Length: 149
View (cartoon, helix red, strand yellow):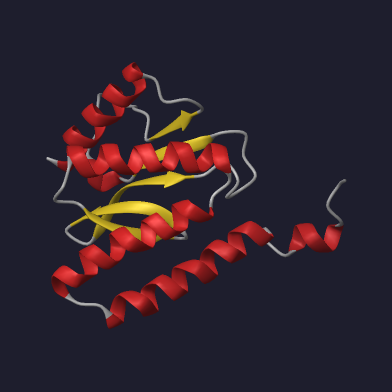
């Protein structure tokens, strides 16, 4: 069904507005947390968010979470716009976006500029995930390790 002109002129989709509301809640929650407890709370927040995901996204997110935590245990787990994310020095380095989050056909593992995965004049910063094979898991581990150092 096509969007009406009124829906198009609003600027943000319902999913985008929901993500912004989630981010505002995350900021308020982060202000109340401190130090080492924040890292433990962030991990619990991520696990709770993953548990809410649809089956296919949940399976991918659980394994990505394990891979990131193993490859870069120094990263701070946190929610970012309602997505599992991992920060370095307070800045989000990488994140998992479920397919259902924005009604996409695949989940995504994304990296922000703090990841410095630079490779020439152009390089990927997001990767579509449909299945986690041994090769894909190794690639994720390599990317996260490189990004975190």
